[in-house]
Image (cartoon, rainbow, N blue to C red; front, side):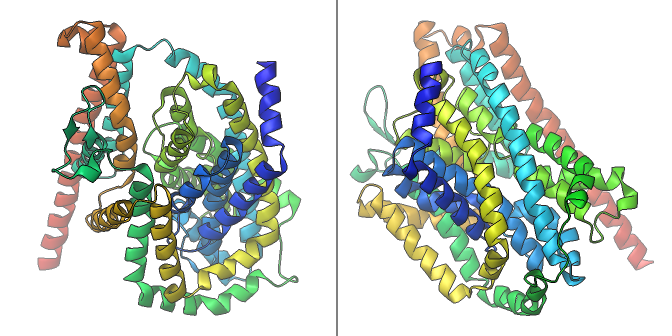
Length: 516
């Protein structure tokens, strides 16, 4: 263990690794400040680049970008009421009102400090908890791992909003895409539709670039006129953020928000460990609870306390989303899935055996998580007000530039023109999914889970000599996990049906009231 820790320090504390970590944070904050560009989009764009780096530099780039982007979304939310990503939507309520009242500088500083505080606290929890969970996961056999993945898929569908079917359908698409290519045992082509170039399956890089980056740019391109008008209306208000004479944030004011930050840290850390919920839910839940508990602080009316709760909540999910990835090989979010993809491109499959086979990588990851917060604080403090201007970049320049980057990234992974065509096709599919309200995260996560799911099913069948009953229900843990998946689906269906009936009843009452 001491040798692995020493090797991890030698991997991280190199000029190249530190440089890429700083570059990742700087790029992430900048991307986060641009409305429509999320952490997933940024990681999808740089994933081909990370393949050319060593493991420590690759993790530094991706985790730095992740941390920076989650905070960066608050900059545009505070500046002109347009969150850089859904994660920062709850920050709009207080942040933009403070900007209109001439306290934009104070709002951005509160967002920065509470973001770093929440992120750092949750990272410490990850470092303490992840090894213990991994030790537990090592006791799981192929049958238990199979049902754990089924439970994760059921949870992804259940937590995909009001429409359970859409979340599960997205997960089903991901499972289907994961089966395209040669069978891992018999090497027989399947689901290739007679196309030889699909025999090797769909490559991960064009998939994530198409679903996340290019599809968002198609959507953004169709909304250029509306976005331009919003930015033009906000230009005059941005001046308040940069004046040195405007009101800043004192250390006493920062400390006075410890309760709200504590709520965000607790909720964000818990939600981050659950696959599918994500930073958006953590931010709104933290904001709502803080507002209910402290009505005298006027949260939602232009208060630093609302910003503290929301930003601590969404940033506290960053580290914990890696816990299910490291402990079970199941990504906790779309962004964690992309980080897992980067590890796989480096030849390291996320699983509990990582702690045994690659302890130096795990320790390097932990060190990078902590260092990333330091750089996030320094770079965010130095460039936050400059990055606020990035939201004013004309869409006519921004959208085509990112589209070109997406095409280059899709081609560069394997120098295969078919990957570009696949990326474009998946981009239009992702755009259509957005339009019908179907989440993309279950697709990406189940695409990564599909090979592991099949692998564990086949292992279970081999161990039990083809007996399906024993292979699927051969232990009390397997039965419990299977029952949990079924129970989760049943409860979710009943809750969705109840909410629909309640909504239908309210609409009928409104119609009858309007008619009378």
